[in-house]
Image (cartoon, rainbow, N blue to C red; front, side):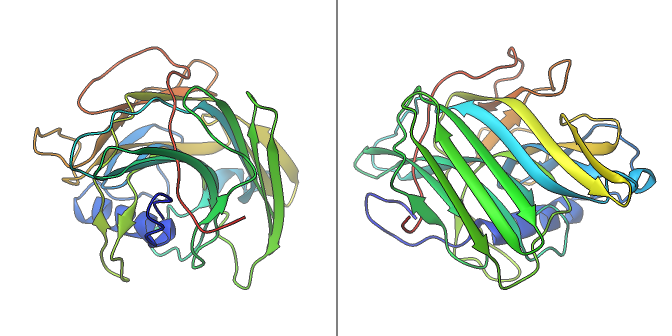
Length: 295
């Protein structure tokens, strides 16, 4: 939710569900076996990278148990007389077409219609609503690190402001089976008015550019555990372009558009750029802000 007005927002998990459904409907689709090759996909609300276990690597990569990443909260630009929203997070799940779960933690930057900018941290385990992390404040330029760990139905989230030294740690036992079929590093345009078929994606905050670094995930299989970067050989990995028109083509009429860069050489870092701009070095630049309930 937007903390300045405390207006409730719909859980992001539904947004992810709809995003993938739209992608499939657009003819780009989700392939069960595209063999580690990088594919671009359009999503109306997610921009970033997703890692998926490979069917041929189940000995060490049946599903994920851990995901982490670091970013710098971007300095956003607020328009006049228009509310905008942007969330940055790492998570497990949420990518498969019929998923009903997602475990995520991150930061947000929202703009009110009066031009007020609000930055904050949050976590979310849909179908529950987002929870604002009040004990760790977030400001533009702060270095932030987030981690999600899953052990059966027990989910642990950790959020650290490396700049201030403040940290948040919480373990929750879910009443549903978590989705650990994907590891996600995402910039998101949040949504409202969601049902099982559709959502209204909100206008994305102009965050300029954000860089994810130190991105890693841990998978597990019948032969043990494995930790690697986004482009680890045991995993498939997908680049998601946030595009409100549901295609990979930019239009000046877009309500929301965010383009992720290619991964750096070791697969641990990439940028996401707001608007039609392309290219750019890999690494964090800028700062961003708030969403949630209360922690």
